[in-house]
Amino acid sequence: MKDPSLKPGEVKQFETRLSVLVEKGLLLMIQRSDILDKIETEENLYELRLPNTQNNPRFLLCALKGKRIILLHAFKKKGRKTDRREIEIAVKRRDLIMEMAEKESKE
Image (cartoon, rainbow, N blue to C red; front, side, top):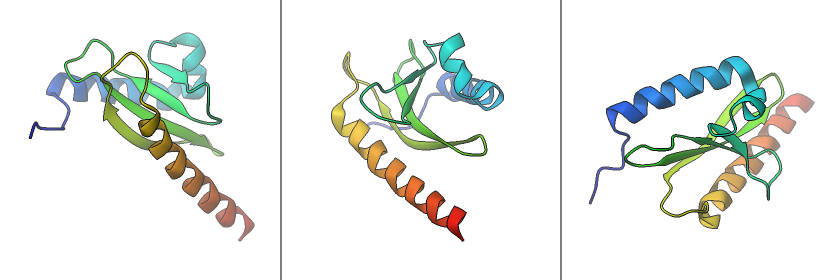
C-alpha cells in the first residue's frame, strides 16, 4: 500500500494556501480561481487545489457563519474531473455540520 500522506512540499503549499484562505475568505475564488473554486453542482462546497504536485491533492470545504471554514474531505485527484464519490462524501459531511450548526444557533 502506498503512503497516503502529503509530501513535504505539498504540506508547505497547503499551509500557505490555507493561511491565504483564512485571510481572504471566499473572495480568494475571485482573485485566484486556480487555488479555490466552487463545486458548481453543489451549494456551499468548494475545492482547494494544490496543482502541479506529485499527489495532486484536493481538499473539499464549506463555509459557515462567523467566517468559519470547515475542511470536509481530502483526496488525490486522479482524473480530469473530480470523482462524484469524493463530492458525495463531502456533501454528507457538510450536511451533518450544517445541521449541527443550526441546532447550536437555536439553543
